[in-house]
Every structure is written in C-alpha cells, then in structure tokens.
Length: 181
Image 1 (cartoon, helix red, strand yellow):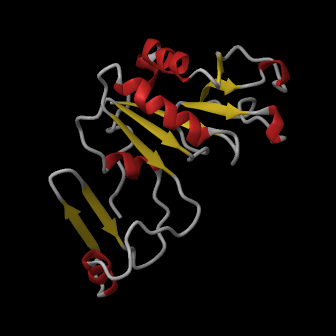
Image 2: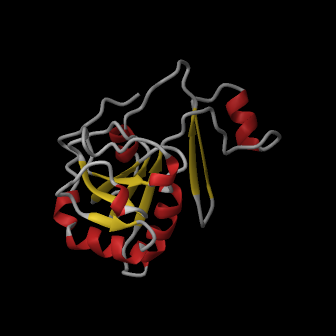
C-alpha cells in the first residue's frame, strides 16, 4: 500500500485535488481509499434510523452493511485524538493507494497544496515530510525549493508523478503500529 498526504490550509484546494486524483488513479486500475481529518463533530447517521437508535442506546460500535457498502460507526466514551496511523490501520488490506487529506502535522510524505491567493504561509520550508508542492502560482512561492513543483490544476500529471515516484510512498504498518483505542 502506498500512502500520501495532502496538506494545506483551509481553502487551498485539497479536497478538490483529492476528488480529481481518485478517478485519475482508478482509471489506471488502482484501488484508492481516502482518510480525511475532520476538526469538528460530524455524523454520517440520521435520527430515526436503526443504526442511530443503536448508537443512542449506547452501542460502542455499529456496523451496517449491504451488498454494496459497509459503514462502521464507533462512539468514544471520552474524546479520542486518533492519529492518521490509527485510521490507516482500519482500512482494507487490498487497497493500492491511500490519499490522506488533512493531518498536516503527520509524519507521512505529503504534497503541500498552496495557493498564493489564499494568503496563507507555505509549510514546505519547515516541514521535512513535504515531498512536493502543488500550486497554481509557482512564481509566487515564498522560498526557492528543490522539491518538485506540480501544477495544482493538472490532476492527471500529479497522478502520474505519484505513480512515477511510488517507491517514496510505500507504507510500512510495522513502523506505525498504533495501540487500538
């Protein structure tokens, strides 16, 4: 499995880029999973549904599955700050690529998504895990870099760059074995 992070400030275009990379990789016959960091309380369940009622009744985990989909919902008795490695450990073993959105402080190799128009500082000068910068304004990068600078608007080229450099994104779960929460 290969794992790459996409880091950048809100509004930089991370979600849009990941959204375009998924089909670009799938067209090459690859199975792609996504790990997304949410900063707020979220819910994928709906009041009145059986699974919601099971959670409300106090179930720690509820798994619901059909012939087309599986969903696992886990309720923590206390707030838990899961690392990206905890979440990767939950994924199916047969995946080729995991695209990680958020987790900008992680120790994963990451592509920084940076836009000059967003008026946010670049992270690459201070983050050794950033291996490339995807931007729509390379001429405005705040510091020169030897890292590859990729065209943020060309998901096909970024997908090809990922594949050409795939060895850099090999994930070793033994190195990051999390203790389960």
